[in-house]
Length: 83
Ligand SMILES: [Zn+2]
Image (cartoon, helix red, strand yellow):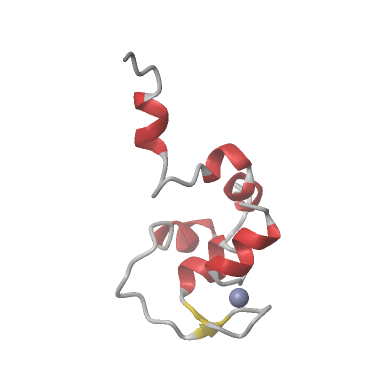
């Protein structure tokens, strides 16, 4: 069977097409003075220190979530955007 979606599948991060949903695009602002700092945390690292709390449920989150998930844990962020 032909698969035309190779590229699309590669771009998906663990199956979730976040760019397509516009959630990350919304938080991406090139005029943001903190963008360089934020870009350092663009990739979510599993060894990231979790020194912040989700603003919704208080679960511990790292800077990746602080910068890219509007200060929410993955669950709350994905719920907020229906992902
Ligand atoms: Zn949460």
